[in-house]
Image (cartoon, rainbow, N blue to C red; front, side, top):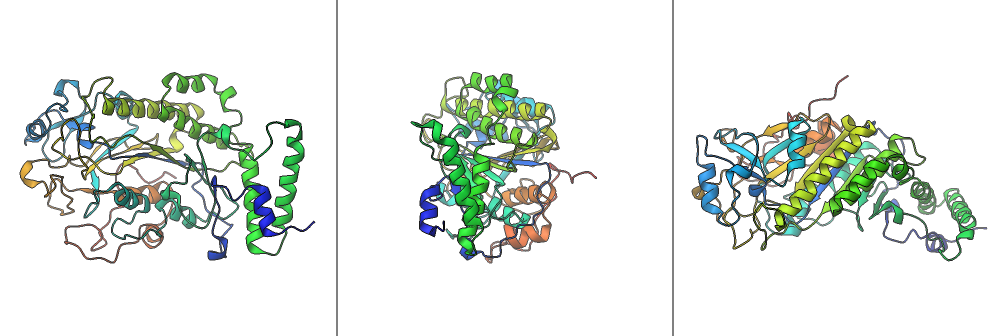
Length: 470
């Protein structure tokens, strides 16, 4: 029986917000042949709200400069005692010893194992101090262009890799699609827990599930066979979603019971969210039907610490945020390593911005440069770059650290697009030309010559991620 487009969308539930359905009419030439990233996985973790980078990677002493002295002058009741910090090495600009917040024992363990790169002083020119503006900059990879229609940097990468409308290469743990994934070529699933991922069967009549499932499948097959592009696309996308919804969480809780229990033992939001990613990776690695997701996004909120940030001690707000994140990150990494995919895993951690150098009562205001973390079995772990210069006389008019790409500057900032570009080139296999033309296109704006992109002097070969072997 023929059905109308409206009937199809209504009956199959594809009008709901759980699946990012491509704008087929705006992009009729979507490619189905694709070149994916092989057996690799990219997991992006967003510390939403602006993590306090200065109380995450913190000076232990002055070295040949004044880092610790300046830190102690700016932080009073938020100051972390030097003896409490977890040492990670010397600052490249001053030789000062640096340490991680004592809450980050999980990250320190990964760092000591050579599985974690800490990238200091990350940001972009003319930093925005609003959450929406700065998050949009990081999520699109276009910090200068203020355009709500710019797609996400991972979304653009999915298009460049050739994923099409019938593919579901990306999973967002959460209720909505992260702007980083926005694009018009392929499907992205957004789900809080995989147990919730499914079609609208009637819980009161479970005996009818098989018949209803067969009805969905028939509707999709019939739609796929039509000559109407949009209806055919909805049919193929729906069929892919149907298979995926039945496969994503299958087998993990039984096959990996001890690891599943370890996430329960942590009993935190980061642990629960990263376990959902682990379930999908397990399904992909074991060949579950319909499983091809290689890109993941997890949002961890609570980092807007204007007040009640607290000391670096158990029970304090910032401490508990970092502890929950670090412990879950270590468990997730170890879980994937035990699955046999640790060397195929790359985890990228970013936040909206750092926090103001001078504390604000018991908290911190919006800042600029901050550290990023990259974790995985193939990562060249270590401490990269210089700690931002926090000397009072060099801070900007807002009291924030300054961004400069001047080669002679020992505190040279690290543009976050260099980090993205390195991952896209060396992990995802995109060429530099593709990255510059389709993902991180330089903005047509002139800034100070010391700032990034003006002369195309990017750096997509950063040492934390060596080129893949033969």
